Length: 408
Image 1 (cartoon, rainbow, N blue to C red):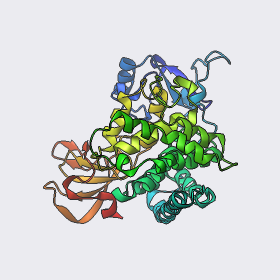
Image 2 (cartoon, rainbow, N blue to C red):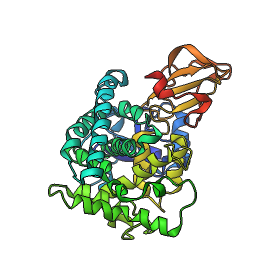
Image 3 (tube, one colour):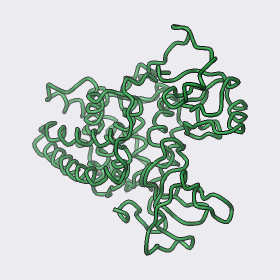
């Protein structure tokens, strides 16, 4: 853990401390994905049942509560490099404040990606300068507040999959890197790498990429070659960073060694490529394709969690879930009141209680006037059975509504 956290045995915990990490995956506990303040004896009891120790956030825990706690001696506890956070990012704008500028940057970046891919397809010219400026603007937006671009990343059309997938993966990669506390320059390289890791697919026949039936082994071999094709395209550019090359070369490697092209495993896979593999998978399964229906973001998160240790590094899966949450901005959800809402912004404190915009009533009819509901601070407006909460995430397009386009 970082210097901003302290390992505390559960028997030494006190009301008012802020729990930043557990000694086990969040999804194995009733505290799903929630860094949280200990508010009552029930929280203490639950932590004692599920954990031996936790890490408390020193910046969010009153100093008076630390008196008398045993402090680890230097060198007592090895630090996991993955969990070091050189930069601690904080939201500096609300979703509403960031969205107008993010929308403008999103439109420009999508146009830049179209121009980039069109030129690459026709002239075989890799013009990275077409992208870098707008990608850097996106990075700055995600640093200020990742929810705005997370929302816009859901604005995808089936005929724009290549461009939109590149853009969305860039957004998820930057949000991921932000969670890991990576430096701004590394976030910029992550953005570029995520926008380029599938460029080799330009050399794969469209009839294979969009085939709705099961692919033959020969067709799978052609698709796997997109990694080599991509590296060939990168070879014409002298100033591509190692981070970008690693993402293109190894984004299909898997943690257990079952991936391609080199069968790398564990931490032999470069960190940028491990990040790329997760964001690529997440965006692919949450996006409509000619051969598949999308699944909800929360279902995708649970899939990633199932695949941890096999396809993906377990610690990185945890960090990615922390970065985007179970209900990222733009997710369609059904409330316990029966109403349908779209997630507007996550609570950074309680991930399961985001701020939502209610758009359908309990009969699933479109409301004349949408209204906001803060499931954390409003206590989730009281319903017949108590505080209103999220009952379930809905598949994209449920009840015939596109929540992102509807609200924007």
